[in-house]
Image 1 (tube, helix red, strand yellow):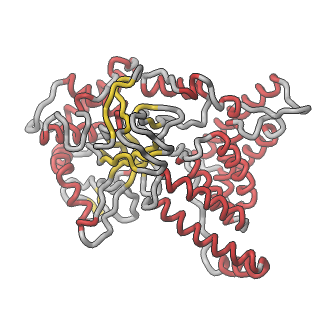
Image 2: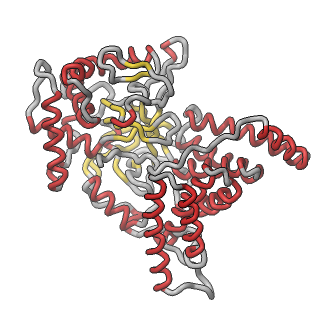
Length: 486
């Protein structure tokens, strides 16, 4: 942590600033979790140490609740699981994720004290809890959590006052960081990272946060790496510059982002992009020129888009994917003559259509929509945005499946360049992408030498292997930065 310094940021409270220069892709700091737990719904399919999804996991023989990749992960977890294991056995069942996370924090405080832990710039006591800003519903949930915690907490453990327990739950509510699986595609848990909590928000940040599950595959444990978050530079950062990350997805007009930030994090965003409403015009763009639609027509199409998105969400939950495609096509027919290429309602429908069509093996139509989506994203997102990189990667894979090798290879190369900065070369996603990049480069050379032979060989290869099914579309958005209890 020598490369950063805590300081008082005007209008924001505490913040972090750089002590030296950083270039895009540099790791500013890495931080292991102070405490972390797997979501309730995934406790049997995700390792409780490294948070990787695995088909077969070892179960703790004592509590029958915790699951691990192997003995290495189980041994690494014992310090944090020991008290939890005993408490679950006595309680008769495991409590919810919030209770488990609060308990792990308290047991760590019991072991190490509430002062600064090694490598931490701030203590748990100094983190913001925002309990004073809670509404009536949030206060009810807090009261219920505190009562559940007291029922679970063993009498022989150190006892904490109600105010301190409420503080810990407030910290979890405001500062719980979303942990994703090894592919970065699904949120699987929540953790507390005190140093990361000091990094303030900006809608156009100079840093990004990536979760790294660590690696225990080496035979010798000295080569193992632990689960951690990495704060990575997205642009050149000079000594003294404040470090910032975005708490919300940028793909929303400034007014909506500010509402979301106020509701979830209790502050009014005063970043440059919100104050000047930068890129709002692109996100609300309409067709220009002689065929420019009237304000009434635009209003009607936007409302139709919102209604369709609601219907699509219901159909996706029920797995009615052909119905989703039908609704997307109908909506796009109304949108395309009216909305601009960067309009967020058009981009949302294009994103859903390309994802669902890929799952249904209708790759050519999916590729067409994916290309339009990526073209719009490139004009809106920061050039080194992680979500942009993931979207470009998916579009590249869709083009490859459609047999459009030139466009597919180009998109995969673009995605690789972005993810090298946002995720780094050793992240599993970047490694997968590097394999795809090399493969599509070889195929492109073959295509350029003899197009007829390329398609013949591709056809033969696809006949001889089981067709790869794209992952089933998820109704979840991509994992957000901080986990907010629903």
